[in-house]
Length: 205
Image (tube, rainbow, N blue to C red):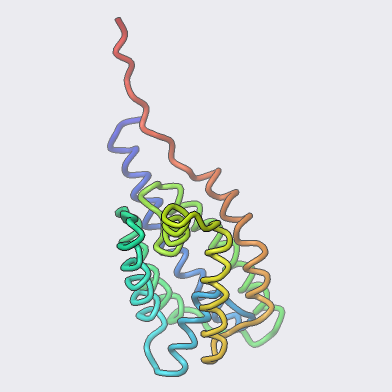
Protein backbone atom coordinates (compact mmCIF):
# COMPACT_ATOMS: atom_id res chain seq x y z
CA UNK A 1 0.00 0.00 0.00
CA UNK A 2 1.41 3.45 -0.89
CA UNK A 3 2.39 5.48 2.15
CA UNK A 4 0.02 8.32 1.21
CA UNK A 5 -2.93 5.91 1.04
CA UNK A 6 -1.90 4.31 4.33
CA UNK A 7 -1.95 7.63 6.20
CA UNK A 8 -5.11 8.76 4.39
CA UNK A 9 -6.84 5.70 5.82
CA UNK A 10 -5.60 6.44 9.33
CA UNK A 11 -6.61 10.10 9.21
CA UNK A 12 -9.95 9.23 7.65
CA UNK A 13 -10.68 6.68 10.36
CA UNK A 14 -9.72 9.11 13.10
CA UNK A 15 -11.98 11.96 11.99
CA UNK A 16 -14.85 9.73 10.87
CA UNK A 17 -14.73 7.84 14.15
CA UNK A 18 -14.73 10.98 16.29
CA UNK A 19 -17.61 12.54 14.39
CA UNK A 20 -19.68 9.35 14.51
CA UNK A 21 -18.94 8.93 18.21
CA UNK A 22 -20.28 12.39 19.04
CA UNK A 23 -23.26 11.93 16.70
CA UNK A 24 -24.03 8.56 18.32
CA UNK A 25 -24.02 10.16 21.76
CA UNK A 26 -26.60 12.66 20.49
CA UNK A 27 -28.76 9.82 19.16
CA UNK A 28 -28.76 8.08 22.53
CA UNK A 29 -29.48 11.32 24.34
CA UNK A 30 -32.44 12.11 22.07
CA UNK A 31 -33.82 8.62 22.68
CA UNK A 32 -34.50 9.62 26.28
CA UNK A 33 -33.64 6.12 27.50
CA UNK A 34 -30.34 6.93 29.17
CA UNK A 35 -26.80 7.68 28.04
CA UNK A 36 -23.20 6.95 29.01
CA UNK A 37 -21.96 8.36 32.36
CA UNK A 38 -19.99 11.27 30.89
CA UNK A 39 -22.97 12.41 28.83
CA UNK A 40 -25.19 12.13 31.92
CA UNK A 41 -22.70 14.46 33.61
CA UNK A 42 -22.62 16.90 30.68
CA UNK A 43 -26.41 16.93 30.43
CA UNK A 44 -26.70 17.56 34.16
CA UNK A 45 -24.40 20.59 33.89
CA UNK A 46 -26.47 21.77 30.90
CA UNK A 47 -29.76 21.43 32.79
CA UNK A 48 -28.51 23.09 35.96
CA UNK A 49 -26.48 25.98 34.51
CA UNK A 50 -27.45 26.18 30.84
CA UNK A 51 -24.06 25.50 29.27
CA UNK A 52 -24.20 23.72 25.90
CA UNK A 53 -23.66 19.98 26.26
CA UNK A 54 -20.99 20.01 23.57
CA UNK A 55 -19.06 22.75 25.35
CA UNK A 56 -19.27 20.86 28.64
CA UNK A 57 -17.81 17.79 26.94
CA UNK A 58 -14.95 19.85 25.48
CA UNK A 59 -14.16 21.55 28.80
CA UNK A 60 -14.39 18.26 30.68
CA UNK A 61 -11.99 16.69 28.20
CA UNK A 62 -9.52 19.54 28.71
CA UNK A 63 -9.69 19.14 32.51
CA UNK A 64 -9.16 15.38 32.24
CA UNK A 65 -6.23 15.99 29.92
CA UNK A 66 -4.65 18.34 32.48
CA UNK A 67 -4.78 15.51 35.02
CA UNK A 68 -2.51 13.59 32.64
CA UNK A 69 0.35 15.95 33.53
CA UNK A 70 1.04 14.68 37.08
CA UNK A 71 0.38 11.15 35.81
CA UNK A 72 3.17 11.67 33.25
CA UNK A 73 0.99 10.66 30.31
CA UNK A 74 1.69 12.07 26.85
CA UNK A 75 -1.31 12.76 24.62
CA UNK A 76 -1.26 11.81 20.96
CA UNK A 77 -2.74 13.78 18.09
CA UNK A 78 -5.88 11.67 18.32
CA UNK A 79 -6.20 12.53 22.01
CA UNK A 80 -6.26 16.25 21.27
CA UNK A 81 -8.73 15.79 18.42
CA UNK A 82 -10.93 13.73 20.72
CA UNK A 83 -11.11 16.60 23.19
CA UNK A 84 -11.84 19.20 20.49
CA UNK A 85 -14.22 17.35 18.16
CA UNK A 86 -16.55 15.11 20.17
CA UNK A 87 -18.50 17.99 21.67
CA UNK A 88 -19.14 19.84 18.39
CA UNK A 89 -20.08 16.56 16.66
CA UNK A 90 -22.62 15.90 19.39
CA UNK A 91 -24.05 19.40 19.02
CA UNK A 92 -24.55 18.74 15.30
CA UNK A 93 -26.44 15.58 16.16
CA UNK A 94 -28.63 17.34 18.71
CA UNK A 95 -29.62 19.92 16.08
CA UNK A 96 -30.50 17.30 13.45
CA UNK A 97 -32.20 14.67 15.62
CA UNK A 98 -35.49 14.99 17.46
CA UNK A 99 -36.86 12.66 20.14
CA UNK A 100 -39.33 10.21 18.56
CA UNK A 101 -42.85 10.14 19.93
CA UNK A 102 -43.19 6.38 20.38
CA UNK A 103 -41.20 4.21 22.77
CA UNK A 104 -40.47 1.70 20.01
CA UNK A 105 -38.88 4.35 17.80
CA UNK A 106 -36.92 5.69 20.78
CA UNK A 107 -35.63 2.18 21.39
CA UNK A 108 -34.51 1.86 17.78
CA UNK A 109 -32.79 5.26 17.99
CA UNK A 110 -30.93 4.25 21.14
CA UNK A 111 -29.89 0.88 19.69
CA UNK A 112 -28.64 2.53 16.48
CA UNK A 113 -26.69 5.08 18.51
CA UNK A 114 -25.12 2.40 20.69
CA UNK A 115 -24.08 0.34 17.66
CA UNK A 116 -22.71 3.44 15.94
CA UNK A 117 -20.71 4.35 19.04
CA UNK A 118 -19.17 0.88 19.13
CA UNK A 119 -18.16 1.14 15.47
CA UNK A 120 -16.90 4.70 15.98
CA UNK A 121 -14.72 3.53 18.87
CA UNK A 122 -13.09 0.95 16.64
CA UNK A 123 -12.51 3.52 13.91
CA UNK A 124 -10.76 6.19 15.98
CA UNK A 125 -8.93 3.85 18.36
CA UNK A 126 -7.95 1.58 15.48
CA UNK A 127 -6.37 4.56 13.71
CA UNK A 128 -3.74 4.51 16.51
CA UNK A 129 -3.27 8.25 17.00
CA UNK A 130 -3.50 8.00 20.77
CA UNK A 131 -6.22 7.12 23.32
CA UNK A 132 -9.09 9.33 24.36
CA UNK A 133 -8.48 11.50 27.45
CA UNK A 134 -10.64 9.31 29.70
CA UNK A 135 -8.97 6.08 28.57
CA UNK A 136 -5.56 7.65 29.15
CA UNK A 137 -6.64 8.51 32.67
CA UNK A 138 -7.05 4.83 33.48
CA UNK A 139 -3.71 3.95 31.93
CA UNK A 140 -2.02 6.81 33.83
CA UNK A 141 -3.29 5.79 37.26
CA UNK A 142 -2.36 2.19 36.54
CA UNK A 143 1.18 3.11 35.44
CA UNK A 144 1.81 5.63 38.25
CA UNK A 145 0.18 3.93 41.24
CA UNK A 146 -0.47 0.37 40.10
CA UNK A 147 -4.24 0.73 40.52
CA UNK A 148 -6.24 -1.72 38.36
CA UNK A 149 -7.61 0.03 35.27
CA UNK A 150 -11.07 -1.48 35.73
CA UNK A 151 -11.20 -0.09 39.29
CA UNK A 152 -10.13 3.40 38.18
CA UNK A 153 -12.69 3.41 35.37
CA UNK A 154 -15.46 2.19 37.67
CA UNK A 155 -14.77 4.80 40.36
CA UNK A 156 -14.46 7.67 37.88
CA UNK A 157 -17.52 6.77 35.82
CA UNK A 158 -19.72 6.03 38.83
CA UNK A 159 -18.69 9.39 40.31
CA UNK A 160 -19.52 11.42 37.20
CA UNK A 161 -22.72 9.40 36.71
CA UNK A 162 -23.97 10.16 40.22
CA UNK A 163 -23.09 13.85 39.93
CA UNK A 164 -24.81 14.11 36.54
CA UNK A 165 -27.88 12.24 37.74
CA UNK A 166 -28.22 14.45 40.82
CA UNK A 167 -28.03 17.48 38.51
CA UNK A 168 -30.82 16.08 36.34
CA UNK A 169 -28.98 14.07 33.67
CA UNK A 170 -30.68 11.21 31.80
CA UNK A 171 -29.91 8.09 33.81
CA UNK A 172 -32.06 5.19 32.64
CA UNK A 173 -32.15 1.65 31.36
CA UNK A 174 -30.04 2.76 28.40
CA UNK A 175 -27.22 3.69 30.76
CA UNK A 176 -27.15 0.14 32.11
CA UNK A 177 -27.31 -1.36 28.60
CA UNK A 178 -24.45 0.92 27.55
CA UNK A 179 -22.28 -0.17 30.48
CA UNK A 180 -22.87 -3.86 29.75
CA UNK A 181 -22.37 -3.78 25.99
CA UNK A 182 -20.08 -0.97 24.86
CA UNK A 183 -16.89 -2.79 25.84
CA UNK A 184 -17.70 -5.83 23.70
CA UNK A 185 -18.89 -3.72 20.77
CA UNK A 186 -15.77 -1.54 20.85
CA UNK A 187 -13.42 -4.52 21.19
CA UNK A 188 -14.89 -6.26 18.16
CA UNK A 189 -14.84 -3.04 16.18
CA UNK A 190 -11.20 -2.39 17.03
CA UNK A 191 -10.31 -5.87 15.75
CA UNK A 192 -11.94 -5.00 12.42
CA UNK A 193 -10.63 -1.46 11.96
CA UNK A 194 -7.20 -1.53 13.60
CA UNK A 195 -4.65 -0.18 11.13
CA UNK A 196 -1.51 -2.35 11.10
CA UNK A 197 1.98 -0.94 11.18
CA UNK A 198 3.22 0.35 7.85
CA UNK A 199 5.16 -2.52 6.20
CA UNK A 200 8.87 -1.89 6.07
CA UNK A 201 10.68 -2.82 2.87
CA UNK A 202 13.13 -5.64 3.19
CA UNK A 203 16.69 -4.52 2.45
CA UNK A 204 17.74 -7.96 1.20
CA UNK A 205 21.34 -8.90 0.58
